[in-house]
Length: 69
Image 1 (spheres, rainbow, N blue to C red):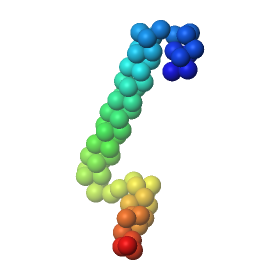
Image 2: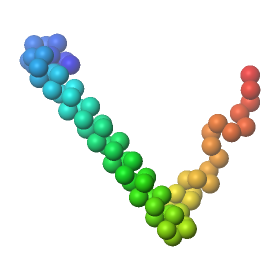
Image 3: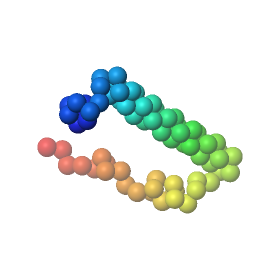
């Protein structure tokens, strides 16, 4: 955005940069979904969560037993 505002980038290049950023975010989310599905399948097949997930899931969620105002 700064390069566009400074006149070193035209609107088409700016839009291409935004599109590339958007597509990269979508790809990252798709990879995360694939990872979570594979982890769920593995857990279902073995009947055991990986150690790091077991520890993570044993932590108390932040939204439990909060004082109501």
